[in-house]
Length: 369
Image (cartoon, rainbow, N blue to C red; front, side, top):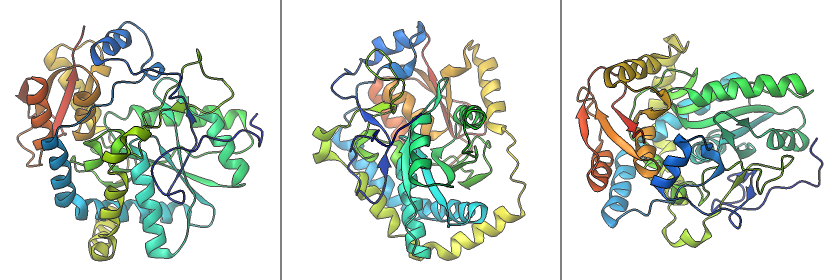
């Protein structure tokens, strides 16, 4: 059981009031593994969470594309933040609410939801960012820490987007395990900015469009790596780990990103209200429509391992930034801006193919070694 002596390391480039990362800084112990070597290790049985990929250092053109995308989509994201925040309020109230974002894609979204509540309702909602790892679950030590500091907390988990729904399922399983072993109980409800996989009930939109924070890695997520769990150099009774990339401070756009979107909140209230009315009339039951698309892709391309298929703009971007891509599927029925996907695919010499039989605008397929 966690004692009050256990404290997380201070990390991240966000303002202290925006988020507390419940993570251990393992930067001194872990060396990033090159993409091809890491892919070989993962495919031969090493768990992806035991090592870090080398952080992609974008070209000037790619960074310019991020800024253009942010200008283009800031208002759309501002609406989605308002929509998801208002649903969280309806579901939980604001009194005992604690936002818990899933590091790292969830972190900027959690910061934005917290800022929305401050803007709209003048309340300062606690926000923590914690680790969840596919196949290994959520960080129980971090959950204990939250309950120790916020007795009776109503925890609302937050993430950036859904793909196949693997994290949704992992969260449900983790919450069941946690609740069976603890007096404090947590709800597996997950709120996301975009739910193209149709696998959660609380979402800002189900459109599969570019969320600019998916374009970059740590430099748009508080300079924090993806999370690590490796007991060769970590303690089982401690927080999950991450690396803090302080050396990238000069190219960090984490605060620019959330500041830009926060400035849209005042002007999007009518659109937020209209979107909420539509959602109020809709059947919010997850249909797992996205998973059906993944199964069709698996059959069409003869892929044995479903984990090699990463659908949606966010997941496709991740495949290009830190995995070894085989090919990228593009759905021409969607008119979404996929310029950054095409730019990365060209830079990495990855084939792009049209595929209309999916509910996503694009899909990344990992190369089998």
